Length: 121
Image 1: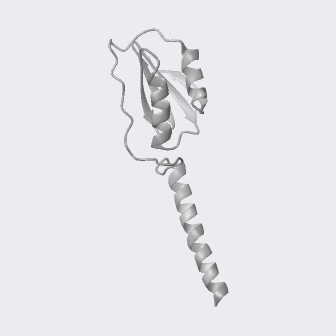
Image 2: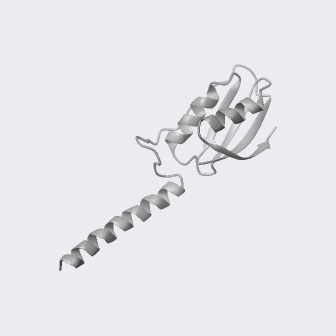
Image 3: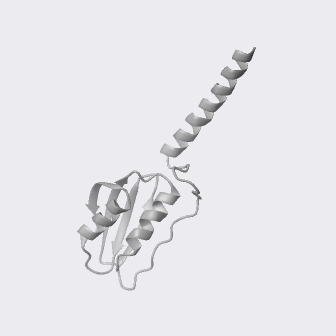
């Protein structure tokens, strides 16, 4: 009888772990402590947008990750960021010439890896 109870408890734990892991990999669950579902805010640029770049990023899987990366990139003058967790990418818009290496360094210093980039306009 005790073995059956222990087995059932372990099965419940495994089911919850698998469920949370699936949600995590879909970007619907937290990978970090204190994660909430608030959307990241876009920074309003002072001038007309002159270009946009799509950057695919690994290791970004929850809103806390998105906020951390958005906050880091918004420190760059003339840059605004929109994050898509499901696609694990960033649309970076700019209203003045930017140093793309500074953008890459900022992403990497925040703890994320760049998979690829694509200039949109």
